[in-house]
Length: 284
Image 1 (cartoon, rainbow, N blue to C red):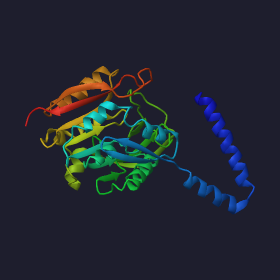
Image 2 (cartoon, helix red, strand yellow; image 1 turned 135 degrees about the horizontal axis):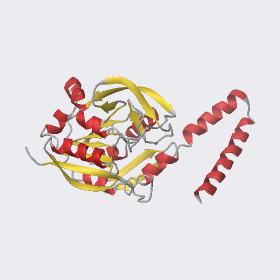
Image 3 (cartoon, one colour; image 1 turned 120 degrees about the vertical axis):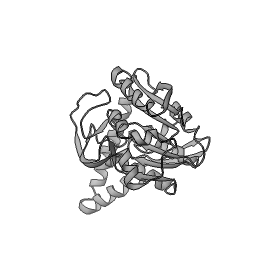
Image 4 (cartoon, rainbow, N blue to C red; image 1 turned 45 degrees about the vertical axis):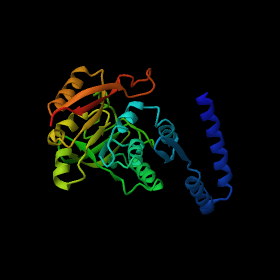
């Protein structure tokens, strides 16, 4: 059914392009440009805290908006435990689904997204929801050390994921061939905190598809700071020794794994082994 729908959509788009081309030259380019801007849909989601608008320039952003409450219900439940005025760091924010939800609760958010296309959508979503006083979006990456390197992208599709900073590895730790790489600056979380003195996180979400361990190793001081109350990390449970190592590093900082649930709503997908690991502070 989806393939038939896409075929029909492509046919309709092709017909529209042909009509526009009849105007010729600069006029057709101007008309096409106006259509491209004016036809981008705004998808509105209603939550228990209010409404959120999403700028959906593509099928994947539309899907992310449409499934914000159902794709990872555990993440929504986790954010609902935050205290008002807490600070939330969304590492791997994508188009900002969870940052926007948290900000709706008056949570201060720092949203980190290295993908240039996703950062554009993230910024537009912050703008159209007038949340720039609660969300600070930053186009930077995190790693175990501060460095200039490349951000390797499996796909440049807007709203896409499965990208990696400094090395082209996927969520399973396997190398992949990037379709595009973008120059990027990356920090260790500890050095970012030391250098810029940002609002300190009370909660951190890490969803980066493959280099979670490096980010955790670069955040030892931050993780041990008692101001940090909880952390959610998405990990591929199929990487048993890798998962145990990441969990150990976090628990050595005084956190305890209290919940583990499936990250993807579609259990029979390629990502069915991906689970969100939620840790809470156990000692002051």
